[in-house]
Image (tube, rainbow, N blue to C red; front, side, top):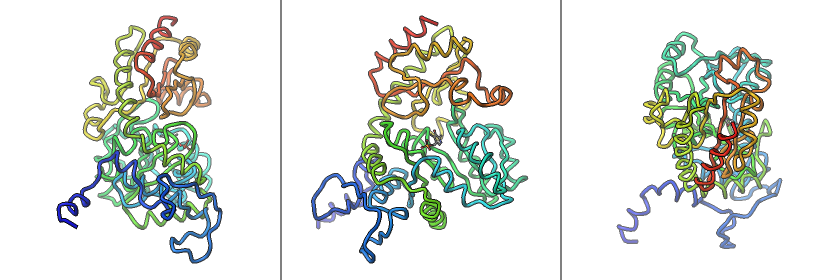
Length: 389
Ligand SMILES: *Cc1c(COP(=O)(O)O)cnc(C)c1O
């Protein structure tokens, strides 16, 4: 082969190419461009690829894991049945007496897992505002077994300086977990910023079509990789081959979808910010975001979640959400279709009023997951709903 061609082959492919092309299809003799779905629960002993039983590995998991590792630019990715399964896999490595230092605005189901499940096994948690520099001092004082972060946070889109926390944790040799679901590896790469584990609910942007659940944990550490593979099979946290196949299909258009998501979200944030009934509009790369300098440093795009505080009471805000035509009022996020969430009556309905106030979840808070529709239609929809307010 000519040397020029060799050089070309060694270049790292761009992110869209990596999202589209996976390695082995495990059906080489057929020439199929798309991998089949391997529904087999079991595999003949001694097969050359080392498969034995789908709970501990399946060709569709391996294909998806190779794409996710390529997109995250890391060595290892382990897939799970959902984001919560991925969180469970990591938390299951802890022992009684361990302390986890958590960002106080973690995803609700992460909080529930720690407070209602792992607490019963003796795992302790402490909750801190990691945008406050004093949280960095707490790392050396409390010496936790693990630090758990999320950035941007849900639903207030707080942005945490991941490199600063990872540096402080590295000085104490404490592993840092970053839930990267809102940004995805396309916009933010936690492992490059020093995190030990990068976890993503692939249910959201990675799959992007609101028709499958999945989760992934990425790392560059072989010991952590072994722990994740062990948790996948020992705890029964594996996905279905069909969902792994769907997510492999979904991720092919992730770079393309995110371009439209981000363009729409940035425009909608500006549109909403100019409306007199807004107390504030939160979007990571806007100049009025409280941590916009950190966001610019660690994110290559602002994502597609926009959160606003409406000057309206609970029933007015609820009616506003209901009067939208293209934003379906629903939990979840990251699909091509736009969604709107009223945390006070939906995701945070059961949260104690005092805790809600402390977290900044007021009755006028609205979270938009901006989809890939035509911007003009989304804009007009928001206009008509705001007029009815
Ligand atoms: C949705 C979500 C999860 C949980 O993922 P599932 O796939 O629904 O289990 C975890 N973290 C964040 C930030 C999420 O948005």
